[in-house]
Image (cartoon, rainbow over all chains, first blue to last red; front, side, top):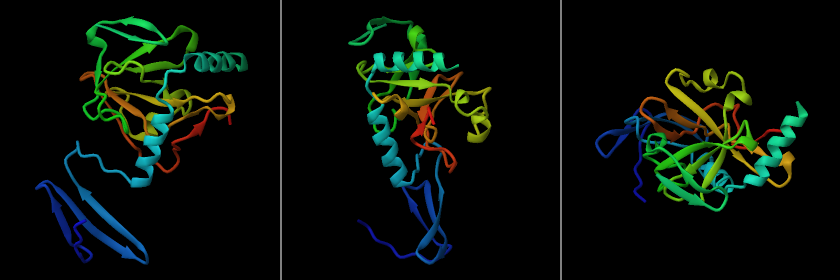
Length: 77
Length: 131
């Protein structure tokens, strides 16, 4: 891992077009700003991993389960 | 084009309905093409099925059926985009949930799709439908 020290207000440039700026430090929290092209996806790691896990759980076509659930919802109305 | 899977058998469709996902879905980055199919017995749910790997598919629903002003709250213009949220099925019906945090966003004109993670704190990855 590349490790760089930065002060508040300083930035790093990645791949010519992504700029990461340290905006604020308070206690053990750091506020970071990102400037990147629109197609660059930037996520908090823990949420990103949670979405991967949720997608994997949702990825099989369980048609019977969904039919059953749709029927149940209809009857509730 | 035709695809085949164990749940639907053969599905034949017009290539025009294919939605391209240049980044795939989160965790499924290799799957770049999907179709949305109606399933009469599963209404109001639909299926988002991978053209490249037809055994992979997701139950989806329009988010406005869960959160009425979802477009406004997520910041997407309904004139340009159509949004769906992915349903996580479970044998225990009370545990069936939708992922309001990471909707599938489709540009209606360009037929381009993308799954995004919203900043909104109020939306959950696992929002139970029968709460």
